[in-house]
Image (tube, rainbow, N blue to C red; front, side):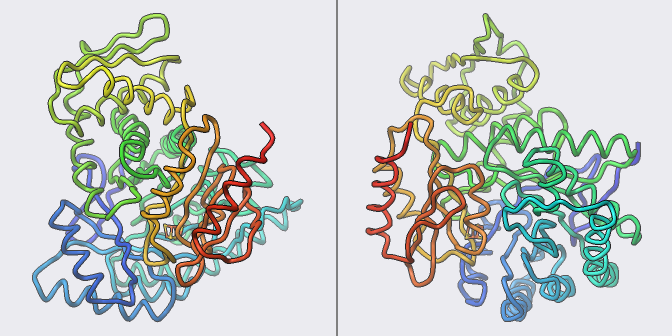
Length: 448
Ligand code: SF4
């Protein structure tokens, strides 16, 4: 087996290298001063790589200035440009920063949620078109030593892929493999893959499927782990730990991002705790009795406790079915341990005891105060077990990325929002208070 090492500035990802923690800014990238200040806070909080959204050519120039200002202050942390939709932006960014993230679902292909009936020739023609668009990016990356992340999101798979493989974890893995074929054909190998979904089980299944296919091809590329739209607070941390932590425990994952709908500086401390917690889990600490996982610990640090309990649950749930979780830790009250167990069961979709909230971490595209809107949605709709509600930052990516949510509020321009039923917009662009009212009517009138 060959282990591909990937170089991102001063960082090397791959076999024998440490797991690297990264995070993403949520300032407007065009606001260079605010973004530089946020990068510095994130790096101080433990971010070893920082990702910045680059929606258009205008932000490419901002990206250059952000990098120059950080380097002028002696900060060498690698920067990653997050690019959707525009190959020219990706090429320009690749000449500036150490890594570019592209999403095969929208680099050339599109997702219109339509079933395509493509012949073999038509399918191959669309792969050829993708390769033609990607070639200049590979050349720029080679010339500048820039790495790529081929970042697959469950919510933005191309129609072509979904029509052939279904809306499945395997479709996510195949989307990555198609890009891998194109990259290797063009002798480009400085790349990382990610399989993200808001559903922990989907993210894990897609990553394991990709890992298996890479193993069968005899070259393991580094893998970036993350549960996207995980939300905030305990739920966000538990979903991330259940998915990322379980895979880390299996020895899979070279860089991680814990996505939270909170300020980005909150993400990295928990991500570091998660890596630490995996190393501390002892086999003697857990048993499975009649499909109930019993996990005991005297861990005093709340984040280490949350991370370890969620990670071991996600790990064991994959290996042998569990139906319930009993957590025992004398440093936390029975109520706290029970609430954590219920939150883990929900994150693993084993027992839905409360509303499932799906919310993006926000980024430079975010169009409203997402933390405040999420707080209002959580307060109003806390007690609907089985209901999945999304709160997404932008209308460009939000509706696709909210994946399997029943309803959602999506940020539009100037602090306004739109209400969605599944992938369908069902309101005008309206003030937040009105959007909440409309959402309430939809939830009350739904068929159960
Ligand atoms: S959905 Fe959220 S994280 Fe994704 S691009 Fe829009 S604002 Fe950014």
